[in-house]
Image (cartoon, rainbow, N blue to C red; front, side):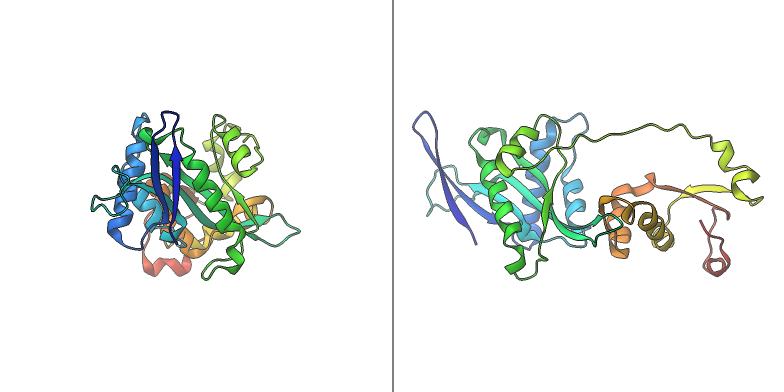
Length: 268
């Protein structure tokens, strides 16, 4: 359901916006992807519209209505035939996350694709959309087609953390990263492979999915809280598309793969 929002600026001018979810059609989604790409065009390596389209369509749980946008008609005339333009966006991602070894997974609503047209910034539009998104997540248990979301999460640069804390009550946690030197010679030695030959190759989907799922479950989902539970579809449709040819695996078989060899293949 769409709603109207009126913003009055310091110069006395009044601007009318309409809040709605995207329509489940390629035309509306294409307008949104182009809008997102235009807002992030300032980046050194700006994402293209196809990046946002891929991000949306390959998500097994994508829902156009969970892409919340504010649209604007320049003449502020509701009866005008002039097309409304998307000027601000927030997307809700439906995810299941782990809660460590002692608790069952929970549903969460991730926040992303938060952006506003430069011509409409500093008008509180992102705040309107974030509050709308939070309400949707709070009411998720009573909404048809949505899993009840127990929490919301997002990744943001330190610059925007105060904004999310003030608008949505998000608690900030600083990510800690470590660079660990690895001696590749060890992994290819008999000490590591048990006298078997080791090979490095790019991951192959869906062939590698069962073993990648198992590794992720054992070393991430079952050990830590906050890890995304990756279903088979998530691996095949989303992870494979997002990582492309950047995911590599080590195996104890040759890099060539034939269907007839799959039953005899060693564990990876």
